[in-house]
Length: 210
Image 1: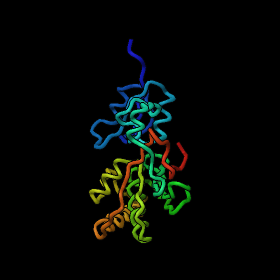
Image 2: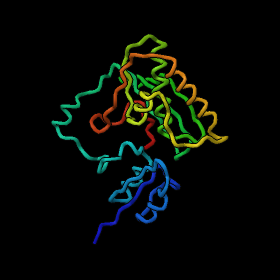
Image 3: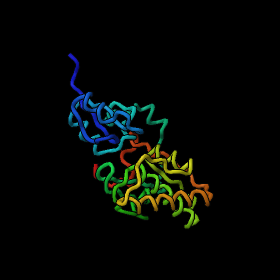
Image 4: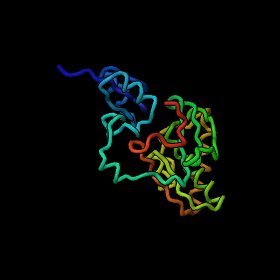
């Protein structure tokens, strides 16, 4: 008899934790950019839904441990840097982001909350804000983000979200346009680095709401 699974949908016609593939399939069918994954326990699924899709896609669970060899290859983070992160209550929901000194966790900037945003948009804005902050201060420090999606969007110079503009989130999208404009009109030499959560724990800029 097959083991019962629980399905998390972060982005779909309806989001949440569901106890059958049939229901999950219904909520992601014909939904562009659907984000979902199965888990073997309700506890794991509930925890995952409070987190980020990018931290779970392609992984069995977030508790999966790296081997000593893998940890050695990854190495340690450069604490002489800044780190950025975003938090979103719901998907979409109230979103905010911030940047901190990686070593001291001193907050350098924060924006939000914005209505009807997504975590990916927040991660994108946080990175662009961080790049602008470093350039304004003539700093050559690197910047860490734990979001591969946001890093790729910044490198492409565009926030490629599937979220639709509404009257509620228009101020957020105006902010996104400003960020894209900054990327188009500015050059930077800042190194954008991926924060290895599995090896180092939560990024220092994490809001601690998981």
